[in-house]
Image (cartoon, rainbow, N blue to C red; front, side):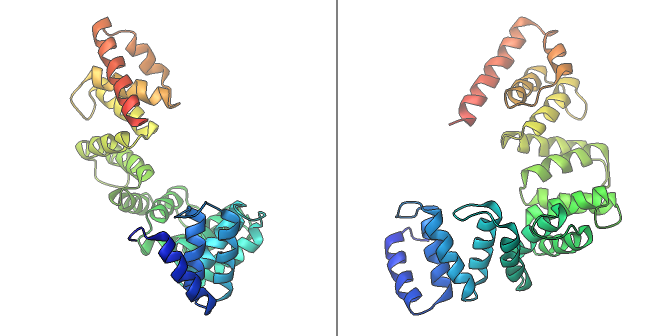
Length: 269
C-alpha cells in the first residue's frame, strides 16, 4: 500500500518459505500487476495456485479467474470453477458472483439459473455492485426467479448508488419512465449526465435525446447534439438525431461539433 513493492516482495518471499498462504497470494499479485517487477501472468498463476492449495481464499479466487479466462495458464473452465467454488464456499462475494455467471452460462458448471440467482443474491447482499446490477437484470427477465420490476429497480438502484455505470444508465431509464420505481425525471437526467461523463455511449445517447426534445429537462439543442456526436463517435449512432442535427442552424451545428471535439479530446487523454 505504501508503494514499497520490492520490500514487500522480499518479506512475502520470506513468509512464503515458511508456508504462509497469504504471502503466496501477495507474491502472485505483485507479479500479476507488475509492481516493481516485470509483469508476468504465468509466474503469478503459479503463486496463486500454491496459495489456493494452502487454503487462501483470495489465491483460490485469483487462480480460478485466471483459469476461466485462460490468462497465464491454459484455459480450463471446469478447473477454474472448482477453485471459484472453493472460495465461494468460504463466503467470498466476488468468487460467488463469478460462479453465478458460470451457472448462468452453463460454462464449467451445468446451466442452472436458480442456483445462479441465489449465488448472485448472496453477492449482491454483500454489497458487490456488479452483482447488484446483474441481480436486477435477473429480476427483470425472470431468470432463476419470478420476474419482479420493483425488485429489479431496487437492486439496480443500489448498484447505481454505488457508482456502477451500467446501473446508472438502467436506473435512470427506470426513473424516467417510472418503471418499478416512482417517476422522477430530474433525478433520471442527473444520472444520465453522470454516466455520460463517465463515457457511457448509451447514457450519452439518452441524454442527447432528452436535451434535443426537451422532455425531462430544459431544451438545449447545442448540448444535446454535442452528446449525440460524442455517442456516435463511440459507436452509438442515432439516425433520428442525425436528421434533427441537419435541421439546426449552421452556427449551432458548429458549436455542437466543436463542443463534442473538445470533450472527445479531453476524454481520450
